[in-house]
Image (cartoon, rainbow, N blue to C red):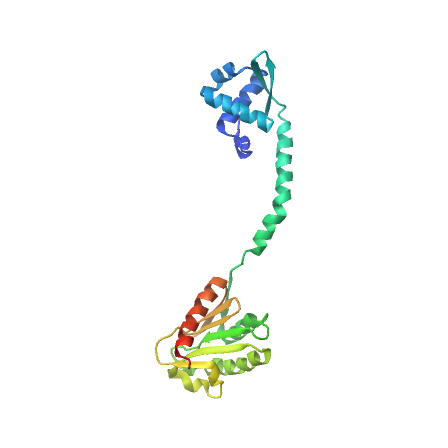
Length: 240
């Protein structure tokens, strides 16, 4: 007989052996159960006590001797239904915990058009006063990406209209790409810093710009916080 389902219900190997033996014997004292199962005396008595408590067996006393018998196997269905009812009572709490857990997601965008769509996706839930941080776009050959820098200049006006607070760290080598921009919101540095990164709410953007543009929009509070802390470790030290 396949007894795996009884294991799935939480019965131990000893409990299963004793329950099956009692189904065969009908009614029995501990002696024949010991003999049939081959279990130790202490294990048999402890397991009989547990099975009585779980409703799988019952007993009657004849004098000082307990006679045990298995309950109707169909009672196991009731046992399963009771477990189901108890589980259904805590199910809403389990679902609430799942919904409360932060979901991390990542999307990939390609090309300049994909890049633009990605930035609008990043700020779609933005509110006035939200902070927008970036490490400047800085490809190997910046002059090949004038279209991207022109978009960034326009995108700055979009952020301004929405009332975002923007701060950016820019390599000094490409300062000319930022003519006409709000210098107060920029920090130009002449030492190596990460580039091609934008941080807003719980979203962070990473961009790879070689011959083509591949951009990654990641939703991760932990990742955002680590980069935000790093951004301010530079900003607070060098922005006067």
